[in-house]
Length: 182
Image (cartoon, rainbow, N blue to C red; front, side, top):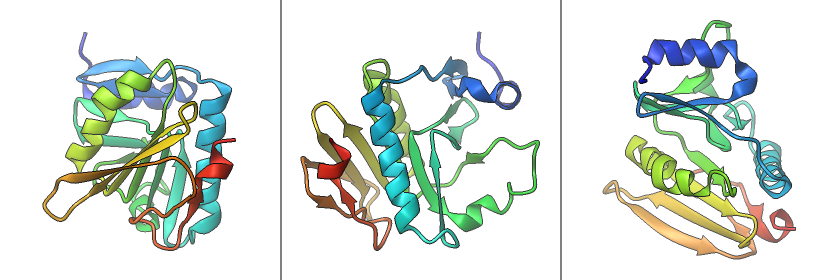
């Protein structure tokens, strides 16, 4: 049964351990993940936190919601966004941390339970939102696929298998894939 955006926000706030998402008006709980997924997600998030000035950018790891419509709201594995976007939420214990505007950086990490769902459902929504840089890390194939928004609104796609990768939307940041994929 489809739920309203209001119901979704209430469920997500009342059950924060559930990691609830909304897809086409239906509640969906993010499942637990394997070690490789969690390590990759945590390592990348930690690298972003260490390299970004918190006065300018905030990072969330498996927290923060991206919304494009009232029927769709996802929790990416990692997001980085301008600190100013959090100002409206900072003193609101009753507000679900949700971002409707395009963000500079969004990343998903492949897992057996969500790999197809992420590619088929979530990544296209991030592109429709206009997020500037979208990463999909695959810890078992040891690959990073990066989609970068172009001036005409399309996305270029690049695949990396190692070395340093610099997110174009996060100046001064470099991620060492060889350390990430241990």
